Image 1: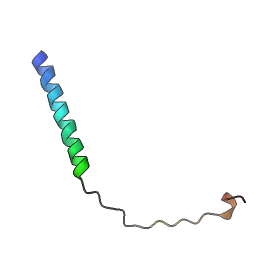
Image 2: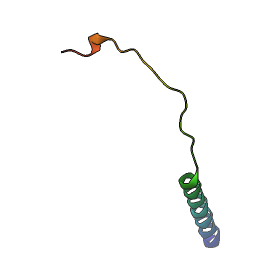
Image 3: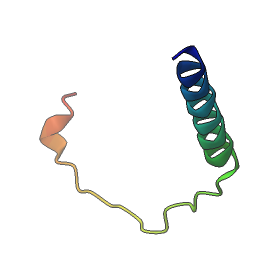
Image 4: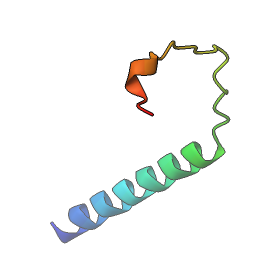
Length: 46
């Protein structure tokens, strides 16, 4: 029973490590769409 739990911890650790390496090296593309919003003057009191 102890070997199964130890193996599960090793597997989870390797999976988390692989996910961390994947996210650290993933080249996420920058957004290309521009966003323009009209803000009313009433929202900014003077």
